[in-house]
Amino acid sequence: GEDVEQSLFLSVREGDSSVINCTYTDSSSTYLYWYKQEPGAGLQLLTYIFSNMDMKQDQRLTVLLNKKDKHLSLRIADTQTGDSAIYFCAESMGDSGAGSYQLTFGKGTKLSVIP
Amino acid sequence: DGGITQSPKYLFRKEGQNVTLSCEQNLNHDAMYWYRQDPGQGLRLIYYSQIVNDFQKGDIAEGYSVSREKKESFPLTVTSAQKNPTAFYLCASSIETTSGVTYEQYFGPGTRLTVT
Image (tube, rainbow over all chains, first blue to last red; front, side, top):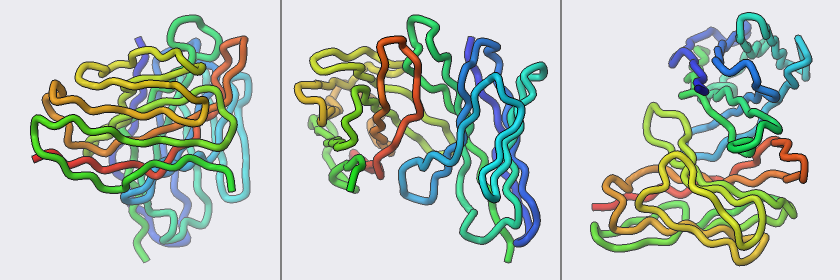
């Protein structure tokens, strides 16, 4: 079955790097996503990675994918107070037939940035 | 300005009443989705639609209904049969392809429904 696990809380000091981790169980996952949710708002797509990639960098964001361990991480460099939010990891199965249009989300990691 | 709009942002209803949440997109996306979010929980899929006049149940469809008469619109009705309707409801859309590849989903700002 599909399951996405994340730790619920992370606290870092402003200027440090944050690393948010995610594990997933379905080895047929094709795409993996990171979303950010600020209080009372919808989800904002931050970045995504295809399963045939190991790493993707986009400005302060670095995504690492370890397919063997089914482990995904999001590193935020030089974390700012504006980065305080809930971060969701999500996976999709791509073209796998029934349910291929669905994303499976983790419960989210609440990142608190201490000034 | 392309995007997804949900209205209203806050909605209050008495128990036993049906309520319809609006979701509109001008991204020309084929697929649309409704999720429910409860505190400390991830997102749970209620219904999704890949194309006009077609929709499928998600993981928690009981007590909800949808329609997809237009590409741009995917309203969700929370019926009185939904036992615990108070939640944050999120609508999303994505490009759809004939190959079934899932592309990233874009979300609206959400509607917080409170039923008393």
